[in-house]
Amino acid sequence: MTEPNANLIALIEVLTAGQATQFERIVRAAFMSGASRDDLLTAIEIGRRLADVPAPVLTQACATVHAWDWMETYRVSRRRDFALHTA
Image (cartoon, rainbow, N blue to C red):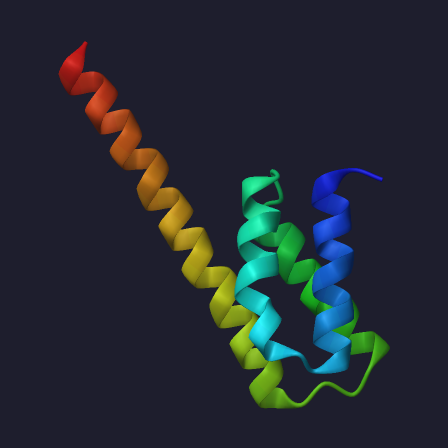
């Protein structure tokens, strides 16, 4: 099993268990291993369909994914800008 897939499965597991405190760690690890925002949102949808996940937990999971997606996009664009200005 690849690392992004393992992280997506871990996200589904903590979501269905309602362990919201684990979202940030797992979402960050998933992004760092190459998972996309869409991959993570799909994992959340799978978890939602597998268990009766409360709306606040789903909202927090989605917000965590969107926040890390924004941070990753910002980090990549800053690195690209820096490379253009130092070349």
